[in-house]
Image (cartoon, rainbow, N blue to C red; front, side, top):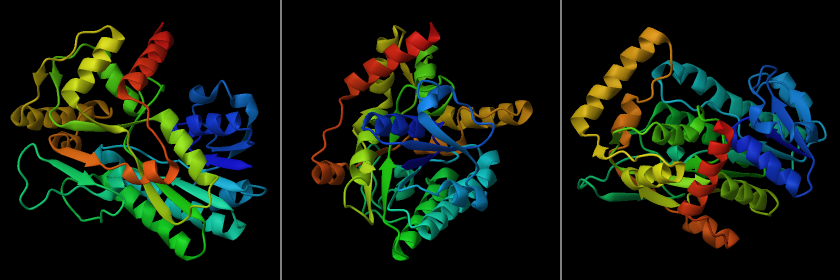
Amino acid sequence: MVLITGITGLVGSFVAKHFLDKGHQVAGFRRANSDLSLVTDIQSQIHWLEGDVLDVLSLEKALVGIDIVIHAAAVVSFAPKDAELMNKVNIEGTANVVNACLDAGIRKVCFISSVAALGRKLPQEYVEGQQVTLNEKSTWEEDPLNSNYAKSKYLAEMEVWRGVAEGLNAVIVNPSVILGEADWNKSSTQLFKYANSEPTYYPKGSLNYVDILDLSECVYQLVTSDIVGERFVLNAGTISFQNFFEKVSQSLGKKAPTKAVSNTISEILWRVEALRSWLTGSTPILTKETARSSKFNFYFDNAKIKKQLNFNFRSFDETITRVSQNLLKKQA
């Protein structure tokens, strides 16, 4: 049986559906108050287990009779107020999962990390607009471009590598921005919501992306293979934010943004958002971290996974068309 943490999120829900389609039994590890909206269509097919990655006893109990663990549970936020919780869940929670899997003798573990864990650092002779390429061999360096989220995922990876050194059969995947049919107000689907509002501005820089269906297939193939002790960048390609919003807006039947956000305006906007967030208690749409990192062109090389699995990623247009149509149906 396959146990999935974070099963109620975008990644966990689609990975669960993929394993079910392949004929596997799936156990879902979730908190008592989890939102089940992304798993309503498979809810009756899941063996549900309540617990928390911060509750070691609940983890140990959940792993009885489990062969494979997909650890997708995480807090994803670029808001400074969430840093403490994010560190606790992402780092301590992953350490707990690793330890519990070692104790239970789990056959295979897949950790859903992020390209953010590769670190972002500009070369010394960086020229504005230059593309900076990172891959699985990139080493982490402290840099202002690395968000609190990136640091938490990097340190979470360190817990997995510790587990590997202690005998854990694990693989790590590092997806870029995951495009998929989720809630309009959650995860990367908020990019579609932004396009749907017919905004005036788009950010400079570029976006690396991967289809949730491709991610799910890669996870499945890696978990059912003999590959252990390696990590893989999952990235279909890169596209400028301008082209991204043009294509998404078109697929949603909306007007595309026409003006690039200048560096000066970007610096003003994140400060305004920080004030609004403080006054209302809401999550900021733009933060200091996202404003400054979006100006640069990073590319995450996918050569390793393509060679290892002989894998071909879906085209951007195919992904955008499917996701947009699905979201519009939900909206209707």
